[in-house]
Image (cartoon, rainbow, N blue to C red; front, side, top):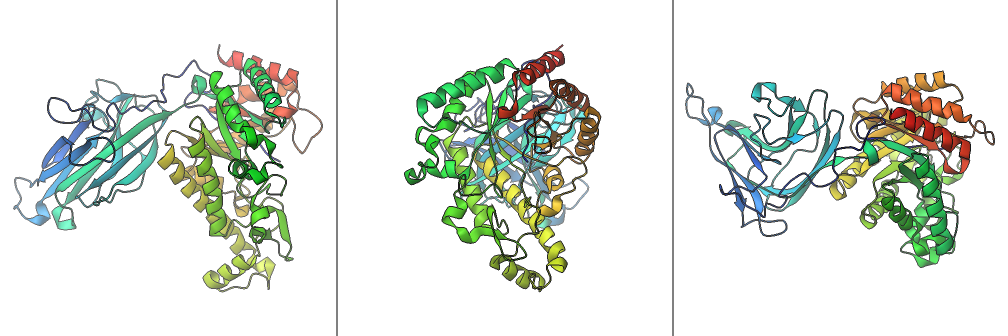
Length: 546
């Protein structure tokens, strides 16, 4: 069935986090200059040659100025001839008042914290890149520098402004850090002196209320009228908040998103007329709770809750017998992936208080080997030289790899979109737990985790056994690399419904998740929770804070 969500930034159960959601760049558009002429709040790293940092009033992406790094002189080793093969230059803009060598002026941080950054740039140098440096203390020197891995594309400056965005995770042993935009190279390898202008820089910590996530899946508002719906929202959030939960994973259908702009769809999605999702966000904000949009891009696309197959019946996934699926899309089609990305981009742009996007069980999970539509037939014919309908059994490995590849393409572009629009937003997914048995249906979560597409992953650890829960949680964690683990547990699920989980098992699973070093937990789902479950969750939360 479905699952859970969410995660904390650092500790599993902790006091209020010191991490802020505000922009950590003091003077992000370089509007204010220091006495030296450099932008206040920015720093300069000098590695080799002449390097100058200044406020540029002749270039700006917004406002009246930008930060400008000028590489104006080559460095040649004293014992070498002054020739192109021996000339180099290296310098960086730093998003803090720091020199890149010592910890002075670097930003405080905690190991395990995640940060996102974005900025606009242009220039005459041929290339640059984003790096990060850390130190173990505020007094640490250059010999104690620690390299922090950064996920960001290389910069190719030109005469037009471009945006760069990326993320990083603070490794163990780092208490201070900085982000540097580094320009470095040798003349003999094509590098040239010039300048790099940067504007509208953002650096922000990704955080949860209280520094951790205690979440629940919520299927959406049932009431269709606004007044009744608002009462339902308030009553539900008060009850969940009293149980110690601080995050909501709210089911968000494509039909609802489309109905926000298409009145003709509101007969089937009446909550869009008064924007129930926006009301949830507002009510949650008042209670210091976060909301993540839980969205399925591939499945649950029946016409009662989705718009795709209403508007584009040709997008239906097709099984090997030639039967179109009334619930799932062919995600191999690029126009389908783009449609889903555009829907999510509208959510991100519409709701500035949205904390994250959580992708529901991605993949073809109806038990059939998809997809055999005309598009997939033509693609496999062109790319692999095979007719997949002639021998579906032989075509199966090809289709499995296509599903995994295309889902990874979607996650890569989803991360790119989120970073560009809202770098501090969380991106996550749910699915199987353990040793990743279902990559072949497109649910290749180990790849997404290890490539850094996900901030955290939520395995559906639905079981009555706390020992099994713990074992599967450990197996999942071993596959995630730097991606965070948030454990999912259930009050009921398809294997036991309508039976309910023993509340004391949920309490014990929350304790086991803490022992695993998980960054939070999410319970499936709101409509299955009895008062006894909420009381057990409250007890587990309070026990974790002791």
